[in-house]
Image 1 (spheres, rainbow, N blue to C red):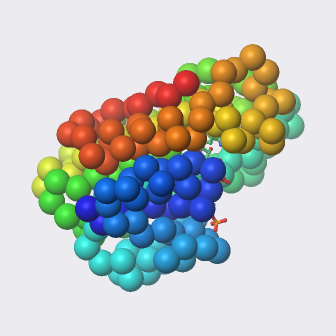
Image 2: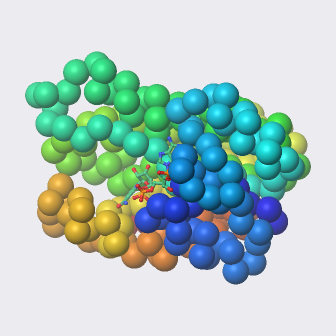
Length: 199
Ligand SMILES: NC(=O)c1ccc[n+]([C@@H]2O[C@H](COP(=O)([O-])OP(=O)(O)OC[C@H]3O[C@@H](n4cnc5c(N)ncnc54)[C@H](OP(=O)(O)O)[C@@H]3O)[C@@H](O)[C@H]2O)c1
């Protein structure tokens, strides 16, 4: 398969590329690195990237940013950051990319443990992750041509614990390589409309 990984240079993306790269051709994408440049917050950039990549068998997104801040300090503009980036960025990848994915191909989006296990400062992440999970569930029943779509919802990644661990006291961490197996299930398996929780 030819697999486009958006966010391939990131903590999770690198592990997904290592896992899937053993068996498939990887096209790495990101804003500032990879084979293809793409900014998921910019619809024209998404369209240009798919035009450059051509026919593809699977699209994996391991990109998406949200603002973390105490709820008392969050204003509508703060939520807009995550809505525009991690939520609509990933939704637009599907909307704009679906014509480029071969029959029976797949999309795999990334959410996270805050979809169901909130922490202080994570209200935008919870909002966005829940919305992406719900989008995947709904899009799965209407995608044509045998196209599939799933989400992977990892816990705090072990390799990111030094940076984010203070937000996640008491949470077990997940090695990126273990989270990557869920992306493999989504890309190489047959299921659709699923949220793979790796905690
Ligand atoms: N790390 C964790 O513990 C963890 C746990 C659960 C869920 N998640 C979620 O998993 C996703 C990835 O996390 P991560 O820790 O792997 O992130 P990361 O290390 O910061 O990597 C992000 C990747 O996405 C790319 N990227 C960032 N913004 C982009 C944009 N607008 N358009 C296209 N590519 C973009 C980056 O490359 P460029 O800078 O070159 O664009 C990079 O390759 C995030 O949505 C995060 O919320 C992370």
